[in-house]
Length: 447
Image (cartoon, rainbow, N blue to C red; front, side):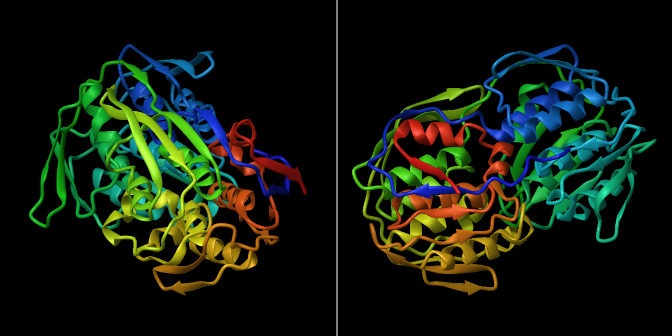
């Protein structure tokens, strides 16, 4: 897939942000809706799907395996699945663009069906570690051939006679856990997948909704064990995708740091394993209120009302990291406008995201006059208070959408505009980011 040419962009000092905004559908739920719909019997009707590049690449891959995936209208999609184990061999290479979640989950979904497929992606995805998913999948009988270091392009050969497995996920990764659960669907008997750190549980919730026999219980080490029965028969369902808390993080922090702002973000998912950023910002003194909380299809959603606040630095509890792993770039920007030091540890996973996200955060902060100490597993940001961040720097995004959005947000509240070297990649997760922020009053300038 060819990406558009680099598009430098500046986030400029902005007036108070005001208004109501609805961020796109949740990316994690969108990927899983398409994949499980493709593995189910009958029709799955999805509303509120995130129509960003990453998710559309997953839709194309599900289609390539033989399911019918049809867009009915904005955010409305119908998937007619093949049943578990019914996927056929794709005729062409599967190109996932920048979609780490889509590619890893699809490896799991096909791993116990006796077909083979070739996986590739953009320059960023081809650098990301896939062995962490591929190696445990071999326990089912799956085989693979990858580039040195377990990188894409790679070929996955699904197990001819799949076996159930017992596996402990060694790192805090919902993607590895989810790939194993999807693979277990077509392995006879019961597979048991355990984790010490509790990661986002969208796959478990959705598998239950589709009719899988799945139970979650406590493990002796304080983690949990997920048991799932294979040769499952999933049945198509209706899914209303809640709004993405990771996307909501950007207008939310913008409203906190631009003086005089008040913004309401509607129908945001409040799954307790995804709200670590909201909890952290509240501890830092954010005026953040949740209204109208209610259940929508097994996930809690609600409206976030956020007002400009004087934040104070804190030490983020390492136990919270897995609940907010994608939000550390924007939290680091919030920390720059806080009073005092914000300490973040336990961020090793950030070294293997779309970029070495930890290095990119530190370089971006320093380029804009913020003092930051690098730790082996994190960073300490020395806050400069409201209006205290100089800005004026240029940030290298390394094709990372969250780095791009975070530093554009910094520009709205800094003394001088902040430039990112490429805003084109924002389309992978939040295609309406610029228009949504402009509607609230934010100022951008082509660089």
